[in-house]
Length: 137
Image (cartoon, rainbow, N blue to C red; front, side, top):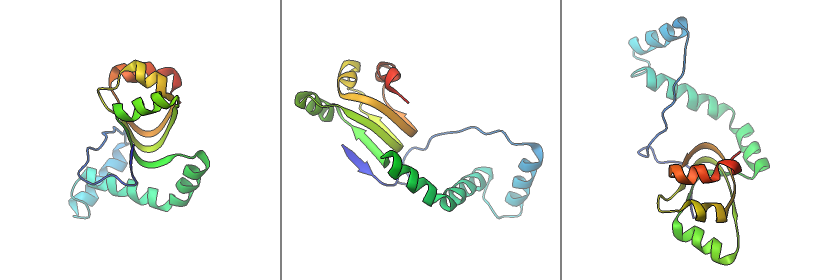
């Protein structure tokens, strides 16, 4: 299992969709036009990072309270096979990215992953996601 506290800038980002009223959108466009931001995405990304920065103490406290891993957690087939051999299960609790290799079978995932709580993104095959659906918070 590998953990990284922060994702590198070059890593794949998750896409989100937001709806804004036309006045807010116009205000963003004005700031872009005036050169404060390169484009709408730059403004939105900057605004999100700024707000997350001002709430970092709250986030850190929640991470500690919930015993979440902050960053990236990756489970390979080998990791899960070692857990199975040891008769152990893992509780996958992540704030960031949790990934499970594509060669992990649904049966191996069910045998070794007791619960899944991911605040961010879970990358796993559709079959593994389906196998863990009843264990996902």
